[in-house]
Length: 404
Ligand SMILES: *Cc1c(COP(=O)(O)O)cnc(C)c1O
Image (tube, rainbow, N blue to C red):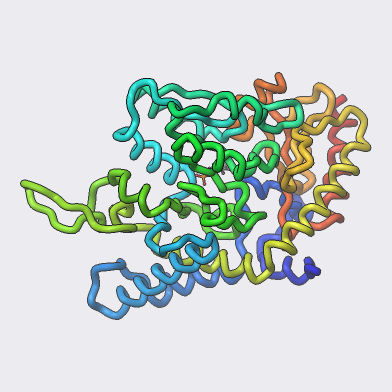
């Protein structure tokens, strides 16, 4: 059992007020809040051993390098990667996806096919469109249904020996749907296609095992799982990371440089040009430790309780419609009330201290599917409570009365 009152004490921001009201933070799918241990890790780095890594003989540099590489191993263990160097530290999910997309530019030929899902975040659509323009590859889309689930029968028809890559998010950020990635990965592999899974929205709720999944690439951002912004990871199977060319040229990523020829460093350095977000990487490791200290099973169970409760309470409101009703979803509720614009409700909720997201959630194709401008999205975390959900429900009722 989780002791939520005690957990809330770990998050200083949860004590603040907004417009004179206690903060109710329901925008966790955009970014999570930061526990004191992670804040302390950041302060400790800049107070005690701030130095550039991997090249100094001096003590500070060695301490920083050790902590940075320890963080990589924490991330490796968490995702169950076979080798630490299969974890590339990046600036976040978007950066990780672009690294893979740009790498594939040299591996694709005209007429090759790439399959993406209709549930993607823009960061998982645009890089593939750019890649197709560059290579002449063709982009295909797995459509969604009214529940916000992928139409897997269509996927089975689309995939063929022409398919070189399949890209899908593990969990949809706009609707919370948990996608059948095991089925996607095993099917794609039968045809020799590689699979990249965007785990940005799954990793705060689920502990993925990249070896059990047999996935080729898995990406995530620290800031959605209690870590800082500006840091994330790319897991790649060793053979794929060897095959892909480096993304950026610069310091750290080379073995030898002359004007005649440069040879690249081994993994992971080949993909980590320049001075990285050292403090961020170390804090990412601390965030993973913190999440594991609570436990992902307890997190999933408690968040599901919040989801079931909030769904039932919100549906009592006249004219309220929830988008994304898959049985298999994380604690995200995307909704509208009648014809009221989501932005108007969101603004009134803010006056009541309630932080939700309104808009298209970087997933315009999903909004087009439902023929709506956007939704109000309340996304819950393990530090939220049923009392906060009651506050949200009251706030939505009040906003609806004011606006209709
Ligand atoms: C947040 C998110 C991203 C983008 O993550 P960044 O940290 O902004 O790079 C990509 N995909 C999904 C599913 C997300 O939720």
